[in-house]
Image (cartoon, rainbow, N blue to C red; front, top):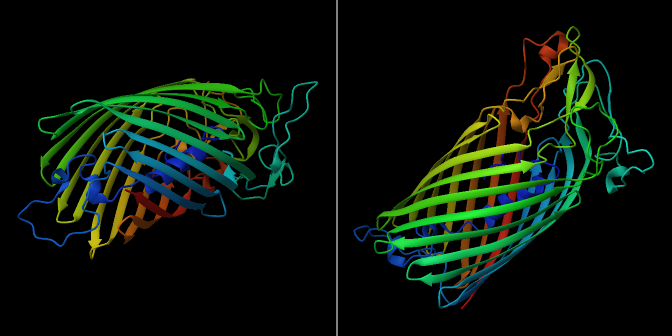
Length: 468
């Protein structure tokens, strides 16, 4: 699971990491995923293949069970940047009649340093300060004031990457969902979620329909999700493109996101299935990161002279197509997928993923995986702006909106220590690469590392208990 770029908007990093943990925590054994929710025969290996049975040769959900799942995630970026400790607990009830009710609670704690978008200075110490409060009001107070940070003044030594070392946040999130059988092969799913951070709140609701056809070998599905976000930066809302430290223009802004997805899953043989999904989303409202800056660089010396607040368009349209396949040979399952993405900001990306579920004996599995991601930069992405040029209407120096590529290497494992108890874990290494130098830049800036992308390690351990 990669950390997608451009998702950090005043608090959504925690949500991104929640998605990472969710993907690992709820990743059913590969053999079970080969055909989730179907009769065991649909996901079974071909009859001609002889293999010792494995404890994970079963459907991903079993009627008449209550599944309790709890896990802890540890995430650490290199160079003592963002660190996350997350706990997640979920309950899923699979009723004998086919109704599925699920609930999940997540708690995150985030600390560390995060890049503020400015370029390094090779000539002296850089000083950064928050926006000024409106006349007659007091500056916001936040825990990180004692160690500088998002709501305080901080300095960066010459040649060092400008990072906000006082980055701190917590997140609590709840998700509830229910799936109801309406008729033979027809299911309705509804759900809702809420996420609360110190500077960001999000509420969402979803609804979906799926229909099984042709002897349960074909499934078509459609879904809709609506999300409403509220951003309340510790520093207030700065005026877009205004100078660092200028007076804020407000305390909060909102964003609305509507997403639609349609999919088709086809069983090709008893041990092979393929899936294709198309998703379309539109977000409107405040999508600027109020903590990010853009450097104004002297055209001759190449040194950052001043800083302005970034500005992003208020509308973003996203489209993506996902194609995946799973092939079972005995208890081993190969999972391969590709995803194409494009948005109205000019970002295009490809994601390629491959993993292999390998049983070890009768009750253990390991699952190595690799993922490659590549994206182009947003139309308005700039590492810096020259001091004497006209400031663009939209500009951001956030490296997650720039062109880059990333590799993710992962290893998952699980063991049934009892018929109804499973322990599992996962380790993942993420490495992001992008343009480091602009040789055409003036002066020492041409020899200055411009890329602030991240590398990280994530670890997860969990326990799953099934009550029958």
